[in-house]
Length: 284
Ligand code: C5P
Image 1 (spheres, rainbow, N blue to C red):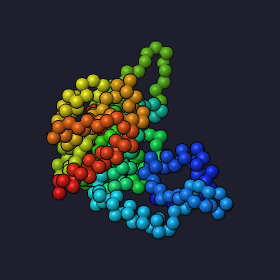
Image 2 (image 1 turned 180 degrees about the vertical axis):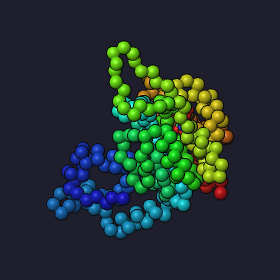
Image 3 (image 1 turned 30 degrees about the vertical axis):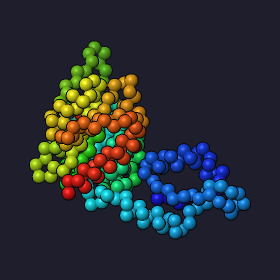
Image 4 (image 1 turned 90 degrees about the horizontal axis):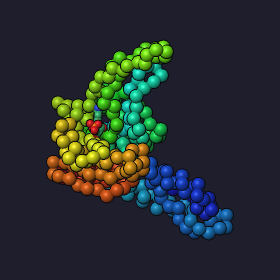
């Protein structure tokens, strides 16, 4: 939580406002600034909020905004990198934005949150314990070591296959033939967490990125993987979802399908965190 105080022209400057937008997106809360006379003789927004206002905002925050306190959440995010040799790997286009935003939204609501992230360019979300991994197998091991959890959200774009035997030395061109990569199947983290015997999280949520027949494929995926909810989304290239800022979600559960309007990935994260809060509250 930040209570900014600065000159009106500094506060309204485009660079300050852009930085504030980034901080809000990362879940930082602001108290003020207020509008009024400034020490420098100018007038406008930039005055620090009164100490009583700041104290009230802090106590309201801790009273109202931690409905998930006492809950443990596990979130996967980003791509995985599957090595071919010491310098090359197989990867995918996942940015990690959706998974990171979900971890931040759960942590903001008080959940003790572990984020297991493949390689991304994103900063670790505030208030979240972030474990960095590269491969699908490392991601599974990190997830299993983070159990028990009440909530698991698998948002990572895990590589389905890895190279069966990684070369210890950089593969060299030999002028006559190209290498053939033999592939092996990676563990399915969502399915494994859903089937965990004693420590299965009470609510396991996966994503179903589809390019056609989104709902039908997502329904089949929910059953096949044994998870509770699937957030299905259309990732056809024309939607710009992969790597983009927005997402159009259909939430599939045993109760049916909820169609959410198109919204930013941060808004999807907040809406999901609210749905989870409501679900856990109703289940008590
Ligand atoms: O099978 P598909 O990749 O479409 O399933 C997507 C869902 O399964 C996502 O929630 C993703 O995080 C999860 N998944 C996983 N481990 C894999 C493959 C997918 O956790 N190896």
